[in-house]
Amino acid sequence: MRFRRRFYAACFLAACVSLPAVAAIQAGVATLDITPRESIWLGGYAARTKPSQGIRQRIFAKALALRDENGTTAVLVTADILGFTQELVSSVAKNVESRFQVPRRLLLFNASHTHSAPVIGGALAPAYPLTDGDRAVITRYTAWLGGELVELVGRSIGNLQPAQLSFGQGLAGLAVNRRRVGNPEYPNVIDPDLPVLIVRGENGAIRAIVFGYACHNTTLDDLLVSGDWAGYAQAAVESQFAGAVALFVQNCGADANPLPRHSEELAVAHGRVIAAAVAEVVQGKPRKIDGAIAAAFREIDLPLEAAPPRQEWEERAVSGSDMERRHARMMLLQLDRDGRLPASHRWQVQAWKIGPDFTLLALGGEVVADYALRFKRQYGFRNLWVAGYSNDVFAYIPSRRVWQEGTKATVPWSLTACLRASKRPWKTW
Amino acid sequence: MVAYGLPARFQASVEDLVVGAVDELMKAVSGR
Image (cartoon, rainbow over all chains, first blue to last red):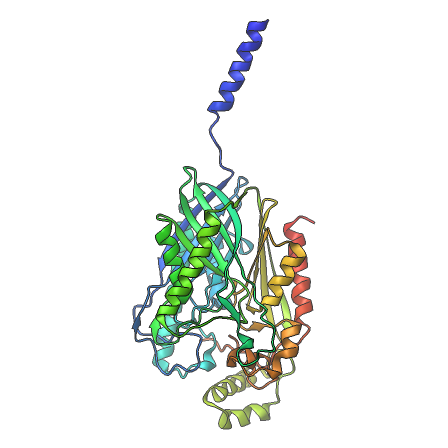
């Protein structure tokens, strides 16, 4: 009897020891060089007068696929661009669903918001004095990017392997609330959190590091292509953690600038600061993430104020600044075509939850820091990642506080413009 | 090229709509 009990105990122990470690999560990563092969207008600044004149740093799109034990597959796509457009994202998502059976709610796009990458589609079109030839280059690049992003997603899924996920939040002090420039009485509302998702293979080697921060990529403003500080940060992370792919997610940094700025030296330095903060999290005690992937995706209409009458657009079309004239002509074309101007914009919001301890909330548009701080207060700072610039990036999303402050600001023309009643309402970035 | 641009700024009430949509989304992924 005693022998039999020992025998069964030994068998049980052997079975426990010999059981293979089955990873509940799989992960796959892929990268795509999206550096333009011809001179092209760079997005974000209305002050530029001509297309790009060279390459300072290569830019990339990257994809991270995650699959849980139920077979649910989610794919995050990040890119060193100003912003994805709804048109581009819809096209890519449709093809991804058709080819790889990943539904829209499980496909998430986030743009770094670098102001030194090609203009995408018709985004912020009134800002640039484009010729027909310029538009053709942008159309060609956008079409190429759309096709390649589908392949990128496919490669990330093809690379799925057993993985271990962990998550931690660091802090970094690069961002300054840009509405304070010239308005020191304004509060320095920023989101200083630096969320980091670490993907390790079964052997413990780091395969991918996804990190986020809430700050414009506007250190650089010349005619050279680059990922700005986020590009340098990704390169620094990949250099420090050899074999890992670094993916950057822009958080709610609509009202944050990297200061000081305006030089390559500063962009590199900013990147190193962020990379050092990422390393602190990776080398600290990030918490393990495991469990089923839950995802949700919603679209709601955000209402606009009443548009000016046609007569005002006609006046602006001849008397405004270059950009005001271009915008007014665009509005007149819409009036001619549709008989009216839109009264709202369809806004996209998405959330992924992995197990009980990690949620990624992805907001469309340029979202100010108030939202990230509010949602983290409400749902928890430790487990929640609040990203902006996700999917469609079409306009600033002001909080009520910023909206009420808005008209006094004389700071960065862009954020001021989006808040100034019907003065520069086209301002979408 | 698709014409891209908005004719006016958002209404101040967008904050309420954003917060409401996020609340709904967070409940959805939490299974509540």
